[in-house]
Image (cartoon, rainbow, N blue to C red; front, side, top):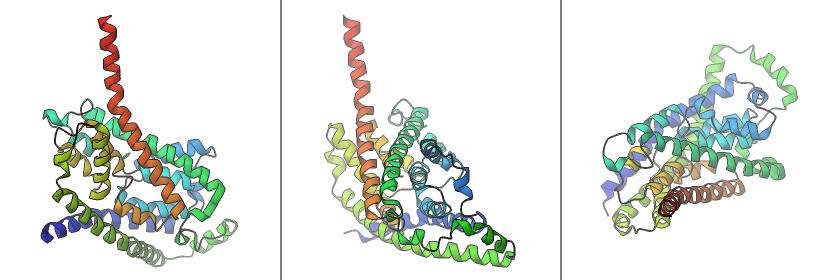
Length: 329
């Protein structure tokens, strides 16, 4: 076994994720200290479908990749943001932000013919953003349905522990005004440090599993056994997205450089699924969600990515065949 390659894969995942984890815990600390507990909940529309729709584009306001978005989402939950809205944000946010959309465009912009999949860079960005939003919205609707049945039993105790009674918020705000900047800075650093330690253990474990999985797939030569069956290619690319644990700000460059024999729809599956689900994210989810909710999110995301990308592959073919038949009549 090439242990140097295994160690390199592990350290690259850690180094890639670490800056965003740090940024995420700092934002989480600021949210915890300066945003009143129910302030965010008050600005969310009462219509749950509209609220979820807005949650899907929160990445434009809080632009985080999936490496740091979990800790931000955890604090937003504690601030009163509905669970379904948080799920829409955590699934769509790593894609629907300016940084990732720009990197996706740049990755597929070179003039090489193999990079022009799905109609060119503008269309690749549109497909990726559109499918990510649709999947996040649909999954959040399912989560909202589960929330009505199970409530806070869907959340890890660390999320709900220590929440204040909303009726005492006014009294708490009066106490907050007495705090000095030294007190606030101390609270921010303590919150950020707690979240950092809490999430890093699972990031390291996820990176170990991902490095091992990446090595196994590379050494196994699976790329050489890709068949012409789109379903097989899509499923393999989904597995690669889960195992490689790439950051959403860099994964487009990997997808763009996959060999041309991979169907374009399989590359789209890689781009959409990766920011929503991989090994390190699964372990991070365990620090926020209970098993029932994690299973709901994973099954919803995986099924939708497979179905939608299969449609992306076959619908244009069927339309072309229909057009050719009509023109020959």
